Length: 178
Ligand SMILES: [Fe+2]
Image 1 (tube, protein in one colour):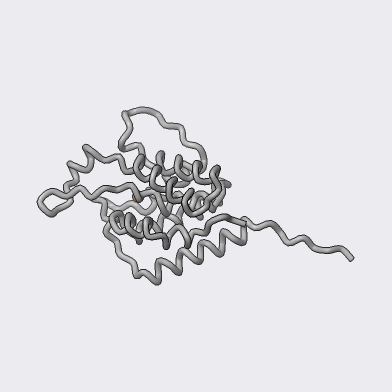
Image 2: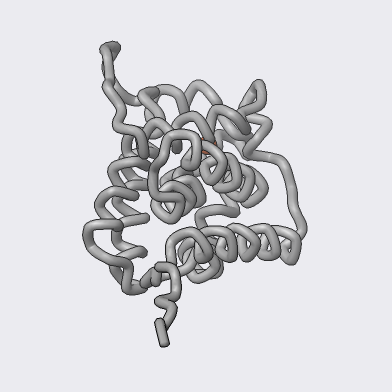
């Protein structure tokens, strides 16, 4: 039994506030990809989908004269660091298991290396899953952040993921032998 569902994470006002910036449609799609990749890499689908859903909540709005300034963003962005911290705080607040909250936060921290100096980063399977899921939904020019989705459709898709994960993570019922 999970402490916290994906729906609880998704519906929280903090999640809703920050996902408006980076795109709810992108977050939902990345969570779905993460579910698929989690199976392939044999990682916990609950952790993978939560990290994927929250991976971009650290975005700041880089506006100059009313328009998104991509250069300003590239130069100053630390959304993975900010997102990891925000996600961790949120998860702990809503009662997530501490170990899970840390795994999820670290996967968010490492979902991109765009803010790190050049070098080799060796990702663990959960971190790899979130990174691949994000890449799978990426569009040129950052267009994935501008895709739209109706609120009820987003919620239905999140609930569908919850149902799948619940089935896989709850223990088999014990059959009584008479
Ligand atoms: Fe992303």
